[in-house]
Length: 289
DNA sequence: CGTATTTGACCTCG
DNA sequence: CGAGGTCAAATACG
Image (cartoon, rainbow, N blue to C red; front, side):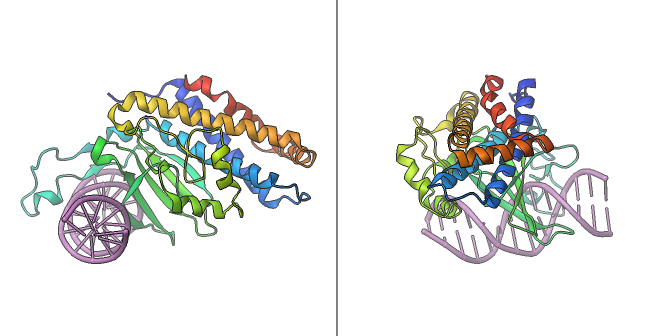
């Protein structure tokens, strides 16, 4: 049956959300940085920060069960419908409002999060110029995955506010495989081919639209949802840890960047402790195990 | 021709 | 009754 989120699961979610926030802040710091040119370091560091953000989103999506999403019920399980409309029009309405909470994240450049989504609706929201887009997992039909998300672009800038509902029971990170155009879209944001060049030498064994490479040993992970789901969470966490560690290494090994590190630590005091959060990421695997 | 997206209608909730 | 969420026919696309 549905996996009930454990207390460590909630803790992990909280940490992820906090950490994501911090990584986002770190990213905007990189936007504003006026450091002397430091070879390719800014690109790589920036890339890593982006990857952390990306991993956070995926981890959040993977962990976002227990929000009530799994409890959606069909109002009319069988085609017992009112007389005045075709039964197909009334048989599948879902009851979703009222108490269902989602995990909300913000993405700066792209609404991609490593999962495969199919759009099923779009709605103009009162008081908002940008429409809200509705997606469900592409594997909904194949494996009954009930994960959904809502995406809304903020008017001021290109920040996507993404709210996740339900959890992925398909166990697949489907967009991880062969989405070159999306990767390009992402690479452009780094202003160089750094990330692409990084692929071959990368020790990371997963891949996404942010330029990492995924090696999947199991071609169809949808077959055993529960185990694969946990495996996936573990993979995302491991990826996150690896990248966070590299950010810390990068930031502390060059002097201009240790200067920046100092700035981060200053900021840390006043805000939500970005470096502490990254350290905390590194411990997240213990929470997930 | 199969699959994904668009879009208008329908449904539920507050 | 209006706003938001979802469905599914129509349409676009490869």
